[in-house]
Image (cartoon, rainbow over all chains, first blue to last red; front, side, top):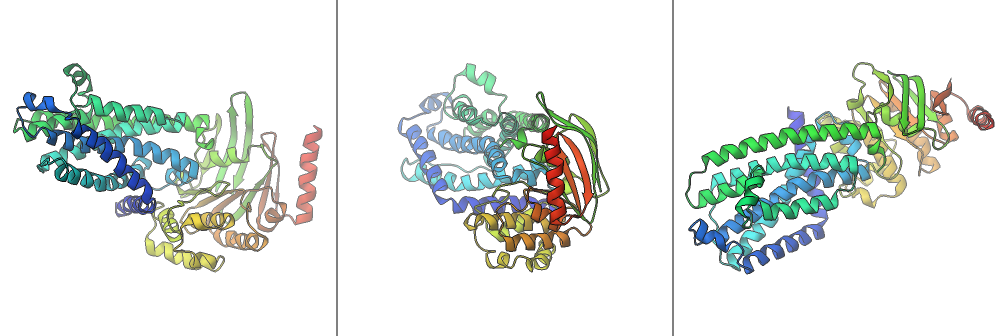
Length: 257
Length: 230
């Protein structure tokens, strides 16, 4: 157990150190996420929430929802990026033959990516407050919901990573998923019809919980549903990852990078 | 000890390995020699668990299994380029379940073969030369507790001085471990190997114990010339 935690810690440490050495990548992430964020605030995206939820500080929904979305897309894309990158580098084979489960080490990588994204989240919160005058309330259940939702999205990330191992080039697919999630999960207003099928996604539940908490509505039922969908996606993700990993071992895809 | 029993691997219609039978023993450095495209990397990948064969099995003795295997493929990869030499060495040991002190103790033992490791320990892996990256990858595999070490194209990119040091280090590292190498380099193979397997047409064509350079070159020529005549 201690050894596993050490490996997990080292996974995070290695990744954060490497990320800090790629300062430009972090800087460009801050720019990209800030520009998109500012566009939403500038164009008054989410104004319909004001009448729907009878909540005047509706931009707060956008700010917190956007941060939840940023963590969700990081959970999805970071795993496939690391799998693809490490297969090219040859270090993935070491992870495969590690004493600890591969998914556990990949989770460490995701945590490192999320910690790096927290720097961006802080920049976004400052930007929202100082430039756009949005006051953001911190609530422990909102933070917990974002963490649980991110874990659920990690399950989807494992499915995408499995596809990446088998099919290799999944960049466009990941881009569509990232953008799609922004518009179908109520991060920015989505139609009821869209929400009726996107509700199975942990991020949609998370966004609803954020709104329920801020408008002081009952959220416990939605929270239980979030925990359930997260567990389902984690199990599904693990199974899919195993399946595609095994298929890649049979076909020899692991060697053709 | 690793026993390979009747391993067959096909990629589409191409039969790369056809019923391979061989064994790799503890305390020995075993080299696989073969011309390009003979299935060396395929065989190594099957042993290390990255490829599932169509037929056959691999029997590992206690402690020696794919989880306890460290693999170095050809090329200057196998490292985290944006991390330091020290970070790479420690990380690879820690994910094999070792403690930091244990890794550093082993580093001190094997450092005598590559004193440059200590000098560059705080440098980023990306700043090393091609040969140094290969050495670091080999070094980081050896200082782990892996019971089986597999190195593809082991002498690739190394100058004569380092080839000799790698050879000594591998002999030392072979204590209580299985070491499997794949190489084209007759000089290196004759110097380092306790056992040599010649692979061709998807089969083990010949298996022999240590050979001197002349004998090895002669045998290599004989085996593969005969096959080309076939």
